[in-house]
Length: 111
Image (cartoon, rainbow, N blue to C red):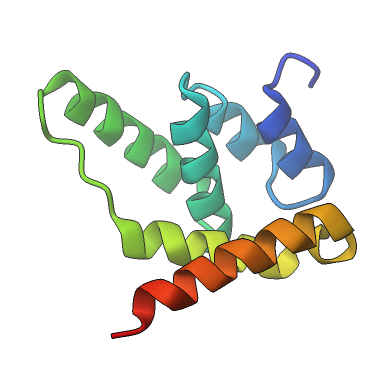
């Protein structure tokens, strides 16, 4: 287990994801892409076969230039789902940062 990246290991240890899924996701080399993928996999409860299929699709898309799309709504949903389950609320420093980010989000939605 120790050969898994820290972000994957954390999710595995807190019970958010099974070992076989964690091993598959650990194949994603770039940290930010791996974290986003991990959050989506947990939030949407993807099966191992879905995870493997999506990883192979991402590899195929990566080999084709300019096909990467940023699905902001999915990422936001995944992030908020993870935040709800997180222990971030009991950490004063993280909570303060979260409050700052939340204020920025609220400012964005004011018309």
